[in-house]
Image (cartoon, rainbow, N blue to C red):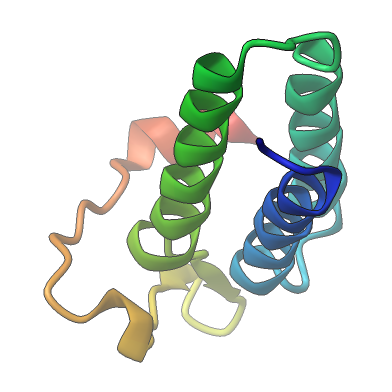
Length: 107
């Protein structure tokens, strides 16, 4: 049987991954925390052991993806561009840089 502790651990792991990945980006920190909370709330009443296991696996995969596949670009105000500094968690990952158009649309 899946226990409450496993679910809480998955929840905390996702929040930890978002805090690490989006450190210094208040907007993304808030939005990602809301999204994680919403996903867990949507599934609050799931009682099927198999379905809960599937959801926990998805949470684990999401945590891994956020930690290892997303790199937060930092604005270099002097150069007027963004700097991407992947960490050791990102070793072996393929880097996709957003286009200038994508960046303009996100502002």
